[in-house]
Length: 250
Image (cartoon, rainbow, N blue to C red):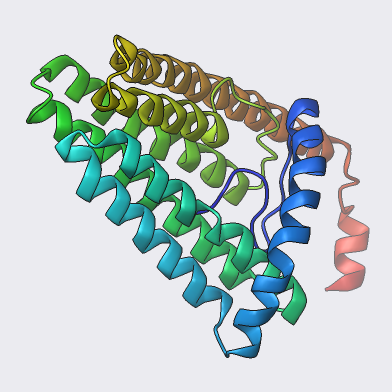
């Protein structure tokens, strides 16, 4: 599963806090994972294979453990496979193979992994968790996360920068949800009252995702209006061909 700081071939626009976290966390994990990435390269493993296996591991952790209420072990499995994105990016850099395809594959599988995580929560609350409201909140988190990502991708595809750092973007959604799920899982080890963290986290993610979606829609609307105004102004100031010039060039 793609992680929130780096992706093959994908530009990032982090906030100051994220930039600081990226600077030190990436430096540490790069030193730790570079030998392992080099080992995989020597064995003929491709970055795409690591990406696919990592996503499969996240899906398994989410859909095998979460629907049974095994939040601690599910989060442990997911966290282990999350590091696959750091590994595949490291491999791509060592091989000089950063590409549009790698960025596309990462981004696509990120959406699949996110859907599995929140889908696992929804399945738990629809079954053993027996809470239809939290099931609906989990589904909303799943859907809004996909739409938030789509708004940025669609805005960029029509030539707009979508220059906004939303309140709860993908990094925040995953960190809040996974940390809360892992801690909530400690309830089965005898820690009392801690299971309330996951419902609280899901509500935070749901509200934050809604706010982020509104922020992006408003930003795209503003940027679109500005781009159209600039295009209209440029058309008004462009010199028109005179009839004489038109005859001369006909």
